[in-house]
Length: 338
Ligand code: SF4
Image (cartoon, rainbow, N blue to C red; front, side, top):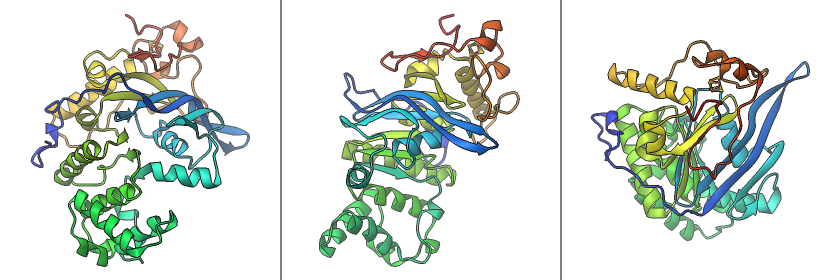
C-alpha cells in the first residue's frame, strides 16, 4: 500500500510478478506515426515501435517529455492512424479500423487522462457526463445505466451524490476517481493511463495509485502506464519500456530493468531519479545534458549519440540493431552486452 505520507513508499514494498507464460493482448509491430511540420519537414513522433502487452500485465512506458509516449498511446487507441506497421488487439488487427469496428474497440480500450480538471464538460452535471458514454454505446435503459454508474462509483470510492455536482465543485482527487470510473463504465479489458497522477498532490497521488492497483486486480485489467516518475513505475508495473525520440530503446521485466539497465539512456534516467529521491524532491523530472534533439531531424546512427557519455564512432553512423520484444530484455545499443 502506498502511504499518503510519503510517495516514496512506491518502492518495491509490493513486488508484482509478471504473469508468465502470458498471452499477448496488444501487439505492435513496426508502428510509425509521423506528422507534417511545414516546409516539407516531418515530425518523427513514433518511429518503428514494436511492443507486446500480455493479458493482465502492467506495462510502464517511460521517457522524457516529447519522446512520443502520448502519440504512441493515441495511435494504439486509434485516435490517430499509424502511417505503417501493425497493431493487433485481442487477436484482431486494429490499425486504421473505422465505423462500427472502431466503436466496438472503444468498449474494450479506454484512456485515463492526465488532467482530471479538463476531463469533464464544465457546463454539464457529472451525472450527465457519466450517462453519456453508456447511452452512446447502446445502453438505452436509464435504470441499467444508473446501476452501472453506481457500481463504478462504489469501486472508486465515491458517493452517488457527486453526480449532482459540476466538475468545479469537486477536488482533483474526486475528479480523477471519476475519470477512472468513467473509463471503467463500459467494462474495458485494457486501460492506457497517461501520467494519471501528475496533476495531483502527493497524498492524493498515493490514493489514486493504490486504487489503480486494486481495480486492476479486481477487474482483471491490462494496463499501459505512461509516466516520467520511475518510483511509480517500479511500484505498479510488471515490465517497462523506455522510449527515446520516437523509439523503444530498452525493454525488460521491472526488476531486471531497475537492477540491470543495459542502455546508457536508461542508466541516466535511473541515476537521475535516484539522485532526486535522495535530495527529497517530490518530482522526478529527469535531466540529461542538453535538450533532446528535435524529432523533426533525428540524429543519424543511434539517436541518443549526441547526449550519450559512451558514444563511439560507430554510434554516429550506424543504427543499433532493433530487437523483437519476444526477447525478455533488450536494449538498442551497440554495446548493450558490455
Ligand atoms: Fe550510446 Fe552508442 Fe549505445 Fe547509442 S549505441 S546508446 S550512442 S553507446
